Length: 260
Image 1 (cartoon, rainbow, N blue to C red):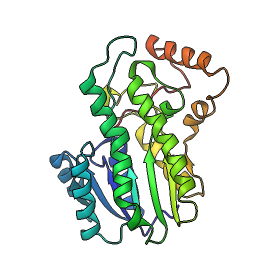
Image 2 (cartoon, helix red, strand yellow):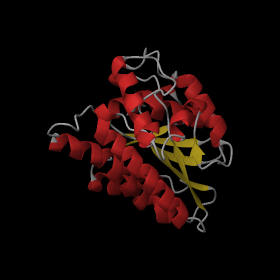
Image 3 (tube, one colour):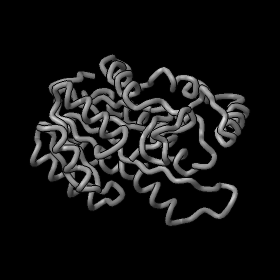
Image 4 (tube, rainbow, N blue to C red):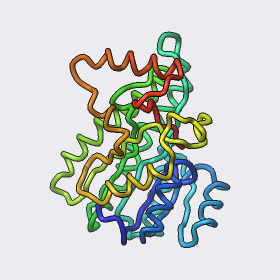
Protein backbone atom coordinates (compact mmCIF):
# COMPACT_ATOMS: atom_id res chain seq x y z
CA UNK A 1 0.00 0.00 0.00
CA UNK A 2 1.12 3.53 -0.69
CA UNK A 3 1.50 5.00 2.81
CA UNK A 4 1.51 8.73 2.04
CA UNK A 5 -0.46 11.17 -0.07
CA UNK A 6 -3.78 9.43 0.59
CA UNK A 7 -7.06 10.79 1.90
CA UNK A 8 -8.08 8.29 4.56
CA UNK A 9 -11.40 7.73 6.34
CA UNK A 10 -11.01 5.60 9.49
CA UNK A 11 -13.72 4.49 11.90
CA UNK A 12 -13.05 4.07 15.60
CA UNK A 13 -10.33 6.68 15.30
CA UNK A 14 -10.86 8.30 18.70
CA UNK A 15 -9.04 5.78 20.88
CA UNK A 16 -6.92 2.66 21.06
CA UNK A 17 -5.53 1.09 17.91
CA UNK A 18 -7.72 3.33 15.74
CA UNK A 19 -6.31 6.55 17.16
CA UNK A 20 -2.72 5.31 17.09
CA UNK A 21 -3.05 4.14 13.50
CA UNK A 22 -4.74 7.39 12.45
CA UNK A 23 -1.95 9.42 14.05
CA UNK A 24 0.76 7.33 12.40
CA UNK A 25 -0.88 7.76 8.99
CA UNK A 26 -1.36 11.49 9.62
CA UNK A 27 2.33 11.86 10.50
CA UNK A 28 3.27 9.90 7.37
CA UNK A 29 1.75 12.60 5.15
CA UNK A 30 -1.86 11.58 4.64
CA UNK A 31 -5.07 13.55 5.05
CA UNK A 32 -6.91 11.66 7.79
CA UNK A 33 -10.60 11.85 8.67
CA UNK A 34 -11.39 10.06 11.93
CA UNK A 35 -14.90 8.88 12.76
CA UNK A 36 -16.38 7.75 16.05
CA UNK A 37 -19.62 8.05 17.97
CA UNK A 38 -17.83 9.88 20.81
CA UNK A 39 -17.65 13.53 19.79
CA UNK A 40 -15.60 14.71 22.78
CA UNK A 41 -12.87 12.16 22.12
CA UNK A 42 -12.83 13.03 18.43
CA UNK A 43 -12.32 16.70 19.26
CA UNK A 44 -9.45 15.85 21.61
CA UNK A 45 -7.68 13.80 18.94
CA UNK A 46 -8.10 16.51 16.31
CA UNK A 47 -6.82 19.15 18.72
CA UNK A 48 -3.74 17.02 19.41
CA UNK A 49 -3.13 16.48 15.68
CA UNK A 50 -3.44 19.74 13.72
CA UNK A 51 -4.69 19.08 10.21
CA UNK A 52 -6.66 15.98 11.13
CA UNK A 53 -10.45 16.25 10.84
CA UNK A 54 -13.34 14.32 12.37
CA UNK A 55 -16.88 13.17 11.71
CA UNK A 56 -19.36 11.70 14.18
CA UNK A 57 -20.48 8.20 13.17
CA UNK A 58 -22.17 5.29 14.90
CA UNK A 59 -21.37 2.28 12.72
CA UNK A 60 -24.05 0.16 14.37
CA UNK A 61 -26.85 1.90 12.44
CA UNK A 62 -27.52 1.67 8.72
CA UNK A 63 -28.93 5.20 8.51
CA UNK A 64 -25.94 6.64 10.37
CA UNK A 65 -23.52 4.99 7.98
CA UNK A 66 -25.32 6.18 4.87
CA UNK A 67 -25.51 9.74 6.19
CA UNK A 68 -21.87 9.84 7.30
CA UNK A 69 -20.55 8.30 4.07
CA UNK A 70 -22.49 10.79 1.99
CA UNK A 71 -21.16 13.69 4.07
CA UNK A 72 -17.59 12.36 3.95
CA UNK A 73 -17.59 11.95 0.17
CA UNK A 74 -19.11 15.42 -0.29
CA UNK A 75 -16.65 17.14 2.04
CA UNK A 76 -13.62 15.04 1.13
CA UNK A 77 -14.04 13.85 -2.48
CA UNK A 78 -10.41 12.68 -2.61
CA UNK A 79 -11.02 9.83 -0.12
CA UNK A 80 -9.24 6.80 -1.55
CA UNK A 81 -8.70 4.71 1.58
CA UNK A 82 -11.42 3.48 3.95
CA UNK A 83 -10.35 1.73 7.15
CA UNK A 84 -12.95 -0.24 9.10
CA UNK A 85 -11.52 -0.20 12.59
CA UNK A 86 -14.49 0.47 14.91
CA UNK A 87 -15.44 -2.50 17.02
CA UNK A 88 -16.65 -3.60 20.44
CA UNK A 89 -15.62 -6.60 22.53
CA UNK A 90 -17.78 -7.97 25.30
CA UNK A 91 -17.52 -11.10 27.40
CA UNK A 92 -20.23 -13.73 26.90
CA UNK A 93 -20.92 -17.37 27.73
CA UNK A 94 -21.66 -19.63 24.78
CA UNK A 95 -22.48 -22.44 27.25
CA UNK A 96 -25.46 -20.50 28.59
CA UNK A 97 -28.33 -18.37 27.31
CA UNK A 98 -26.79 -15.48 25.37
CA UNK A 99 -28.07 -11.95 25.84
CA UNK A 100 -29.86 -11.09 22.60
CA UNK A 101 -29.34 -7.32 22.88
CA UNK A 102 -25.62 -7.82 23.47
CA UNK A 103 -25.33 -10.14 20.48
CA UNK A 104 -27.11 -7.67 18.22
CA UNK A 105 -24.88 -4.83 19.42
CA UNK A 106 -21.69 -6.76 18.66
CA UNK A 107 -22.95 -8.02 15.30
CA UNK A 108 -24.23 -4.60 14.23
CA UNK A 109 -20.96 -2.90 15.13
CA UNK A 110 -18.34 -5.50 14.20
CA UNK A 111 -19.91 -7.22 11.21
CA UNK A 112 -22.78 -5.29 9.65
CA UNK A 113 -21.03 -1.96 10.29
CA UNK A 114 -17.95 -2.68 8.13
CA UNK A 115 -20.05 -4.35 5.44
CA UNK A 116 -22.43 -1.40 5.25
CA UNK A 117 -19.65 1.19 5.35
CA UNK A 118 -17.70 -0.50 2.58
CA UNK A 119 -20.86 -0.80 0.51
CA UNK A 120 -21.47 2.94 0.95
CA UNK A 121 -17.97 3.81 -0.29
CA UNK A 122 -17.12 1.12 -2.82
CA UNK A 123 -18.40 2.78 -6.01
CA UNK A 124 -16.63 6.01 -5.03
CA UNK A 125 -13.40 4.12 -4.39
CA UNK A 126 -13.53 2.50 -7.83
CA UNK A 127 -12.98 5.97 -9.30
CA UNK A 128 -9.85 6.68 -7.24
CA UNK A 129 -6.19 5.90 -7.75
CA UNK A 130 -4.43 3.72 -5.16
CA UNK A 131 -7.78 2.87 -3.58
CA UNK A 132 -7.85 0.63 -0.52
CA UNK A 133 -10.50 -0.94 1.67
CA UNK A 134 -9.05 -2.10 4.96
CA UNK A 135 -10.48 -4.16 7.81
CA UNK A 136 -8.99 -4.28 11.29
CA UNK A 137 -10.02 -7.75 12.44
CA UNK A 138 -8.23 -9.87 15.06
CA UNK A 139 -6.18 -13.01 15.53
CA UNK A 140 -9.34 -14.25 17.25
CA UNK A 141 -10.79 -14.66 13.78
CA UNK A 142 -8.34 -17.57 13.41
CA UNK A 143 -8.33 -18.93 16.97
CA UNK A 144 -11.40 -17.95 19.02
CA UNK A 145 -11.34 -16.73 22.58
CA UNK A 146 -14.13 -18.80 24.12
CA UNK A 147 -15.27 -16.21 26.74
CA UNK A 148 -15.81 -13.77 23.86
CA UNK A 149 -17.43 -16.18 21.41
CA UNK A 150 -19.63 -13.70 19.58
CA UNK A 151 -16.80 -11.20 19.16
CA UNK A 152 -14.48 -13.92 17.88
CA UNK A 153 -17.15 -15.12 15.44
CA UNK A 154 -17.56 -11.60 14.00
CA UNK A 155 -13.82 -11.40 13.36
CA UNK A 156 -13.83 -14.78 11.61
CA UNK A 157 -16.72 -13.59 9.48
CA UNK A 158 -14.93 -10.36 8.57
CA UNK A 159 -11.84 -12.32 7.52
CA UNK A 160 -14.03 -14.43 5.24
CA UNK A 161 -15.82 -11.37 3.84
CA UNK A 162 -12.52 -9.60 3.16
CA UNK A 163 -11.26 -12.55 1.12
CA UNK A 164 -14.46 -12.68 -0.94
CA UNK A 165 -14.36 -8.94 -1.53
CA UNK A 166 -10.69 -9.07 -2.48
CA UNK A 167 -11.54 -11.62 -5.16
CA UNK A 168 -14.56 -9.69 -6.43
CA UNK A 169 -12.56 -6.45 -6.68
CA UNK A 170 -9.45 -8.07 -8.16
CA UNK A 171 -9.82 -6.25 -11.51
CA UNK A 172 -11.19 -2.96 -10.16
CA UNK A 173 -8.05 -1.23 -8.93
CA UNK A 174 -9.34 -1.34 -5.34
CA UNK A 175 -7.19 -3.37 -2.94
CA UNK A 176 -8.68 -5.12 0.09
CA UNK A 177 -6.36 -5.40 3.10
CA UNK A 178 -6.79 -6.95 6.53
CA UNK A 179 -4.95 -6.02 9.71
CA UNK A 180 -5.28 -8.83 12.28
CA UNK A 181 -3.83 -7.60 15.59
CA UNK A 182 -2.74 -9.79 18.47
CA UNK A 183 -3.59 -8.73 22.03
CA UNK A 184 -2.56 -5.07 22.21
CA UNK A 185 -2.27 -2.83 25.26
CA UNK A 186 -5.16 -0.34 25.15
CA UNK A 187 -7.58 1.10 27.68
CA UNK A 188 -10.36 -1.38 26.94
CA UNK A 189 -10.80 -4.25 29.37
CA UNK A 190 -8.03 -2.67 31.48
CA UNK A 191 -5.34 -3.96 29.13
CA UNK A 192 -3.00 -0.95 29.26
CA UNK A 193 -0.75 -2.71 31.77
CA UNK A 194 -1.43 -6.30 30.70
CA UNK A 195 2.01 -7.96 30.43
CA UNK A 196 0.78 -10.59 27.98
CA UNK A 197 -0.36 -7.92 25.51
CA UNK A 198 1.81 -6.21 22.90
CA UNK A 199 2.59 -2.55 23.67
CA UNK A 200 0.69 -0.22 21.35
CA UNK A 201 3.65 1.75 20.00
CA UNK A 202 5.68 -1.19 18.64
CA UNK A 203 2.47 -2.71 17.28
CA UNK A 204 1.77 0.42 15.24
CA UNK A 205 5.39 0.74 14.10
CA UNK A 206 5.48 -2.86 12.88
CA UNK A 207 2.05 -2.53 11.28
CA UNK A 208 3.10 0.58 9.36
CA UNK A 209 6.17 -1.23 8.08
CA UNK A 210 4.08 -4.14 6.76
CA UNK A 211 1.51 -1.75 5.28
CA UNK A 212 4.27 -0.33 3.09
CA UNK A 213 4.68 -3.74 1.43
CA UNK A 214 2.44 -5.57 -1.06
CA UNK A 215 0.95 -7.81 1.65
CA UNK A 216 -2.82 -8.30 1.71
CA UNK A 217 -2.78 -9.50 5.33
CA UNK A 218 -1.03 -7.09 7.66
CA UNK A 219 0.39 -9.21 10.45
CA UNK A 220 2.93 -8.30 13.11
CA UNK A 221 5.27 -11.08 14.17
CA UNK A 222 3.25 -11.85 17.31
CA UNK A 223 0.15 -12.55 15.23
CA UNK A 224 1.75 -15.25 13.09
CA UNK A 225 1.48 -18.03 15.70
CA UNK A 226 -2.32 -17.79 15.66
CA UNK A 227 -2.63 -17.09 11.95
CA UNK A 228 -1.02 -20.44 11.20
CA UNK A 229 -3.22 -22.54 13.50
CA UNK A 230 -6.53 -23.08 11.62
CA UNK A 231 -6.77 -26.51 10.02
CA UNK A 232 -6.98 -30.19 10.99
CA UNK A 233 -6.47 -30.64 14.72
CA UNK A 234 -7.12 -26.99 15.50
CA UNK A 235 -9.47 -27.74 18.41
CA UNK A 236 -6.58 -29.04 20.51
CA UNK A 237 -4.80 -25.71 20.08
CA UNK A 238 -8.01 -23.75 20.77
CA UNK A 239 -8.43 -25.71 24.01
CA UNK A 240 -4.86 -25.08 25.13
CA UNK A 241 -5.07 -21.43 24.14
CA UNK A 242 -8.23 -20.79 26.15
CA UNK A 243 -7.05 -22.71 29.19
CA UNK A 244 -3.87 -20.62 29.24
CA UNK A 245 -5.84 -17.39 28.89
CA UNK A 246 -8.30 -18.21 31.66
CA UNK A 247 -5.54 -19.33 34.04
CA UNK A 248 -3.58 -16.13 33.45
CA UNK A 249 -0.56 -18.00 32.17
CA UNK A 250 1.82 -16.01 29.99
CA UNK A 251 1.68 -17.32 26.44
CA UNK A 252 3.10 -16.50 23.03
CA UNK A 253 -0.45 -16.81 21.78
CA UNK A 254 -1.33 -13.30 22.97
CA UNK A 255 -5.02 -14.16 23.10
CA UNK A 256 -7.01 -11.13 22.02
CA UNK A 257 -7.09 -7.57 20.84
CA UNK A 258 -9.22 -5.07 22.71
CA UNK A 259 -10.17 -1.98 20.76
CA UNK A 260 -12.75 0.71 20.15
